[in-house]
Length: 226
Image (cartoon, rainbow, N blue to C red; front, side, top):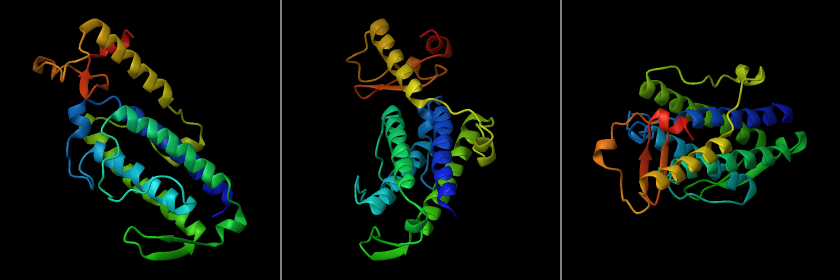
């Protein structure tokens, strides 16, 4: 593969993750964390795993960043924090790939496995594995959305990306979440509440919002009024 193709895959990766996360933010907390039998249990576990392995490979490629010590670690319990971390990591991956050229792609790159064993592989092969790995587990996350919603999740096809398919602005979605949390506090004065009253458990949710280790779920009407 050429460097331009790898750069396209890095851009596609960011686009596909934005589509996936936008849909994930719209689930109830119960659905988001429900174990439905994929490799890492739930959508929550799968999205955390994808972020973890991206960080692992970027550490191997650059020598910088976090070095996760467990493949099943949950990096972020809070969905909004996980989303922000995903934005940052996707931008970082694009910047790393952008600095390579055809010569560096052909070079051997040394790194250590999670067990500490030294390895050396052609850089292009490492990137090829990285993007294939993302696609595999993103497919599992996509299946989670199908099962949990009973509907068709947003397409993650590369051809849709190449044709200019829309990309959600995750930062805008995060700001919206924060505004709704502020509205929640102002309207219901639940700043110090450890959890929402049980009667709210079945309210149709628009998104998940965490505040002081609390999960607040609101109806579509409330979310749409902000």
